[in-house]
Length: 214
Image 1 (cartoon, rainbow, N blue to C red):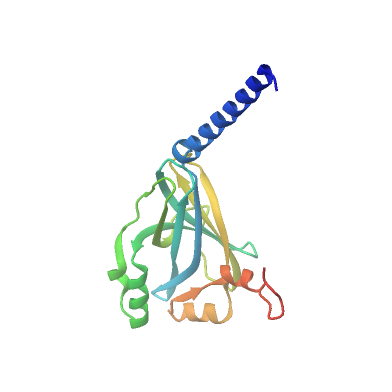
Image 2 (image 1 turned 90 degrees about the horizontal axis):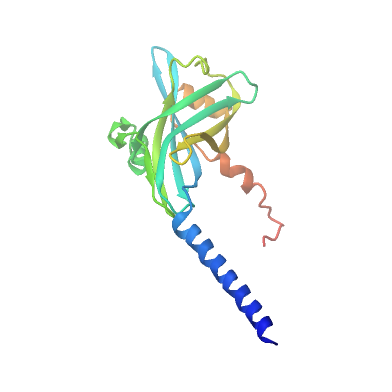
């Protein structure tokens, strides 16, 4: 190998090293906030006053920031869409709560005000870290685009939507399904809080007794 070939190989390795250093610097120190959301259990809590009922939703969310820079999740909303297209609700966040305390209170049939930690506020998510919060959501009253109507049996799709300080645009993070039919609807009408794992149920149906998983 002559001197010119050696110089070309050395230059190629230097460029590759420079690219790797720049890429690692971007990933570990410079990449902007990029939040992904995950959740599992959706809890619906009925409030019955003067023979009318409102549903509050309790949701534990995991916010994972894949970017190197931290930032705020400024707002979170739930959009309820019935499969038949009749019902559209918009839910806003009310409070952060202690979910363990919330469960204990539900089992003891006491008022769950003791589970409240603080009113909802923007959530700081550091770079390359995960933040977990449990939030009570309630209907946004008076919004003409999302009128509240009578609850009727239907399958609902619930969009979990966030807005963060990286772009300030609304983004659908996840859509889960919830069947408000049969026993679930009967329990809510009677004032009973319901817990649902519908979102995990569909993937679990792929597990069969005679199928070997890899």
